[in-house]
Every structure is written in structure tokens, then in C-alpha cells.
Length: 115
Length: 113
Image (cartoon, rainbow over all chains, first blue to last red; front, side):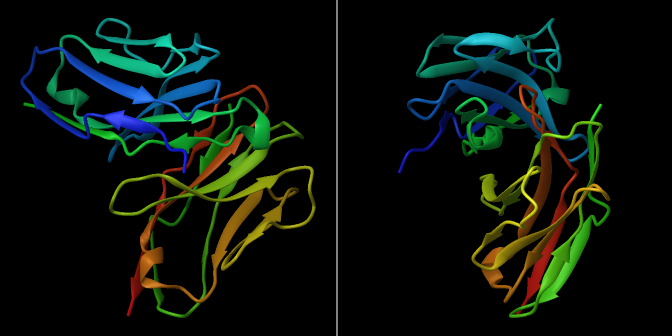
């Protein structure tokens, strides 16, 4: 049963610290998405990769956030320095381009708490 | 820009009964896809059902079915024979080809035993 995996599942850190979240997309999927979920804003798209190339990161605060795909099996989202307002659940999702309408498979999320 | 509206922040249903969750969207595209995702307390986002806009037939997956009204830009989810495990947040989502997915704000469904 292929699944998107994310680590860590939960992270508590102090303001100013660097946070790195990792995602392993489903093997064979060529699109990867990073979302942030908060009560106030709902699900927000932060970044979107196709074939490891960033296509859209307009939803991401550029001064502190960065997203990369070092290889096809790993996507990372970094926050440096972290701030309390970054506290949220961060989801990674993967898909097969436009196959099946662009259906996305989500990981379990990383709950980030910045104190 | 495409927007997705879920006008019911919360809904409640008695176990074994039927409930319908509403979703409307705004678009000028003719080719697009619609989805319902479920997010239980475990926070895992799970795809419930998918509808292609070019298909007139409403999608069905076991106890889950949709009422897709393209002209009205409406895409409601019907859950039949509700079960306790159906309790979750439900998100409606829209996507047009080569674009990213847009999600609604969600509807929290409570199932009463």
C-alpha cells in the first residue's frame, strides 16, 4: 500500500530555530505539493513541484521558507528562523501530474509548534 | 481566480441516516475536476470521491455519492447509511488542468449514535 510519508510527525521548537520537514512522495509520482493548514486560513498551498522543478512557490513566505527536492524520493520544507505564527500542520502531497484529474495523495502531516 | 465555497461549517447526522454536504465553486473553465476529501481526527487527508466535469453521470463510491450540477456550479456530497467512522472534516476541492487544487474551508460532520 503506497503512501506518502512525512517526518517528523510532531515538532516543538523555540522561536528563531531552524525547522526542517521531510516528505517521501509515492514512488512514481512526479508532482509534489506542500500545504499549510491552520484554523484561520484553512489549507494553503505553499509550494508545488513537477519532476523536481519548482513550478509555484508564490504562497510561501520567501524570507524564511524554502522548499527543495534534492531527488525524486525526497522533498524538504525549511523554515529559518521559525516564528510562533508558523505554528500549523504542514502537509505534503504527491500525484501523477494530471492523471486522474490531478488527484493528490496526502501524507500524515507534521504538526509544528513554535514557542 | 477559482474559489470553492462550503457554506456549512458544521453538520450533524444520526447514525444510519443520510446527510448532504454542500459545495459551490466559481470558475470560467469548462474542463476541470472536483474532489471531496475527508480529514478524520487522525488529520490524514483521504480522498473520498472524484468527479470529472465532462462526465454527466454523478460519481459514486459505495455509500458516498455526489450531485454534480455543472450549470449551477454545485457539487454536493451525499453520505448514505452514516457510520460513526464518517465523523470528520470534509473538504471540497476544485482543480483545472495544469493548475493547483483549490480547497473549501471545510464542513465538520458529527455522527450521533
